[in-house]
Length: 235
Image 1 (tube, rainbow, N blue to C red):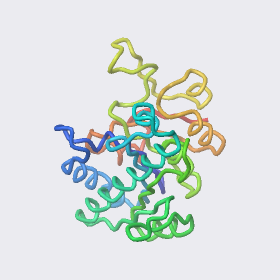
Image 2: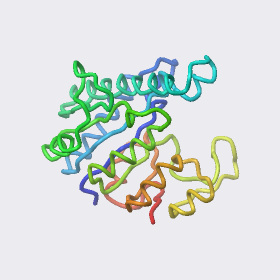
Image 3: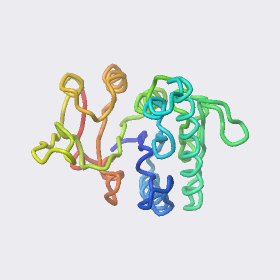
């Protein structure tokens, strides 16, 4: 069983069925899922993307906004999502803190590693917003970095599929499920679970990654308790 986990959630997971950027029913569902994990004494940190609001790389190509500016806009989108998660979690009775890599002191704490760890030790959920605070880095890389910094035992990548596949199962009916892979295999074969920088950072620090379906009730808790759920990438 993991003592401390970092949960990576894509911004797209927050999208409502009608296309609205934030689905309140999903936030309530996620609050219950995270609450079940913390009830077991497991410390939870979260990194959330911003793709439901603004995705820097894609939008800069469409609009002509330069990549760095687009990435900063995407970072601010992750702060919006972090605040939405905090509101839902606290409504569900989970004490939560948001820390931002970009200073927005009126609404969130600045990212301070030792303070984040102290929050976790006190049983609070910590949500890291604004990625790494630097353009040209994805929130996957931010998740790997924060997980290593806080000494997480496991990084859980929450997705819309049941685990790791050799190709996109939504596009390829012959996609094969992979229960376990090494970092070398994941990087070398180009599995699209996380970008290469994130995988390399986890590999260098011996941090295992588990890929699970975020929409299946109980998956986040079960992923912290055993290897029966999802796929595992390790050394």
